[in-house]
Length: 196
Image (cartoon, rainbow, N blue to C red):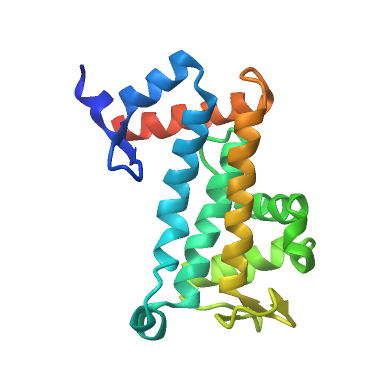
């Protein structure tokens, strides 16, 4: 077995490595459930789980709405890239945000604010180290959006639901559907990136 096939893509909650070789085995068997579970857990563990640690000291001293929103913005781009089959989102990230919020009715008040979220939250945090345009981030777990204040806790809960819906879609759609073709295209790029 080549060294590339042993690159870990994820380890599941049981501690088992999901390597490129294991993923390719899932593909050969057309095991939609295993692949959907793999991608859900890979994305959940990287972008959402770190902020769900239930410890008083952590919540009071370390948990931060800005780092939460930075992580959540990365997940939005990643998730939309999987849905579209894009190898990367270079120069197209703004469109991904607009489409994401238009397509996810659970985000309600943010439906037509994708470009604002992209510009003032995603780009503000990632490039300036702060939100811009008068936008603020809270962690009160109340309203998702109040004026220009986004609640990171509420946002994360809704985003987790979107991720779970993607997993369910993969499980239910036909193997040769567009959603699966796009998924496989994105995964080919991820695997190629481990070998460059």
